[in-house]
Length: 174
Image 1 (cartoon, rainbow, N blue to C red):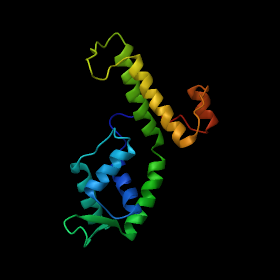
Image 2 (image 1 turned 135 degrees about the vertical axis):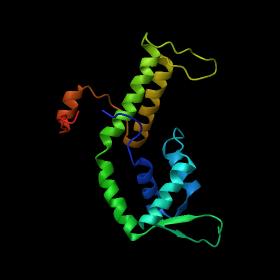
Image 3 (image 1 turned 180 degrees about the vertical axis):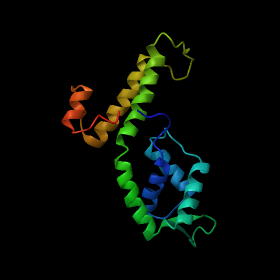
């Protein structure tokens, strides 16, 4: 179970992946992360630029000059940055459970606000509501994304224990 916030190092890992594609500048990276999240998450300049500067200090990225855009600070990965990216890819592979905990945890809180009598969150006109319709819309969007990337969604009838067993996942870390 995750105690707080998104998995540590998420932005740094995404920045490395984006720099591996091509040299980029900070605002371009911010825009790309926003696009990757479907517009639901927009990191600040204050989170991306320090990462770029740290990568530069560590020797993982270097600034490059571009004649066509001399005022922008472009960064590209160095050979050491490529090695760091490989290390972080491995590290990120181990964080799938943390990502799932964040997604499921926030959704469970959304549903609790929607139907748990302990919460009395008012429905404001013209705003999102904590209710069954909006909850269903969230699930619908997740299914549409699944369909887009993986093909038609099929319900999973397995219990959590059955699902973990079928996928060889050790539950001792819970």
